[in-house]
View 1 (tube, rainbow, N blue to C red):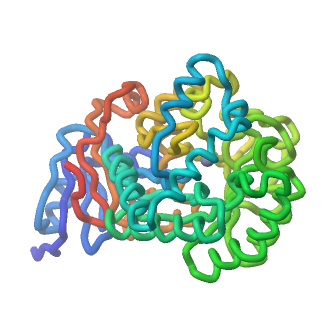
View 2 (cartoon, rainbow, N blue to C red):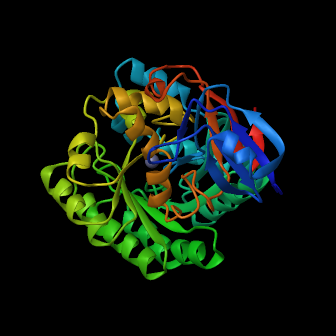
Length: 404
Ligand SMILES: [Zn+2]
């Protein structure tokens, strides 16, 4: 019998998870950067001659994680604010006093594009050590048109240097910059007239995002920005209902946004809109934990209503300095009430689908990109059970072993 050559055979999985369900067998054959076949490794060996092998040693083998809500274009952490919050200040008070997002903006503006790209690459490497092989990546700490484009170029350079597969998002509407504080409409004008067109025409962003919140953008300004982005052919992703209900969820669904994220305060109207639309819900349970918020997004109600939910880190310096999806999985299970299987689905296939990439990312099925993780866990139920321990013992991206 002639064996076909393949690049890598992963064998010895205790659990093989497709991104949607547990598969038969313990092995995956990979070649030319794609998944070739899954199944019992004894059978795979009858058809494939691997150039190299990787023993999963009884662990869980799953698709590489897809983090669909990330703010990696930042320079510094904000541990000083964390200390203030530990003493009782809340996120909105810190933002109103010129801290928060605006302090990250000052740090980004102080760096050259090359310096920022090195910071972003460092963030991507930390994410990948925790199993993330693809991520959405937002600008949003530049807040001039040029600084936002600089951030997107730094994201592209970091993707190139690290091999992280990136889905870039223009988030010029993250906050109103200090220089426009007295006249936020002028910043929205700049975003609609220059920022969004430049982001779309340069190809530096595939989507646009807005923070719809009392401390950021009201509904009318958000609508103007999102309608312009849509007209330019950008996909829409939205932050809404984190602290207050302004109608952002209904707006996102009306405009056909890919996703609306946070939803800690989601009301019945927003839930109904999501249930009737096609917009994904992005749930970020480590943020509520980090900010000391008692309310979580109503994950079980969303799922019961048929809304497709992904889980993401929201990795950022102010409200979630956590690059690890396995860590966030703990909060998804503990605070949102998801099962291990639902959580793993939410950070692989559903997250990929929300980015329009479900035909090549987030699933261990033939023809999909050869991204996978090996988790040192005795069974699926242990995913999200351990806290503060990285279960990822190997990462394969585009068919090559990148972390072991
Ligand atoms: Zn965010």
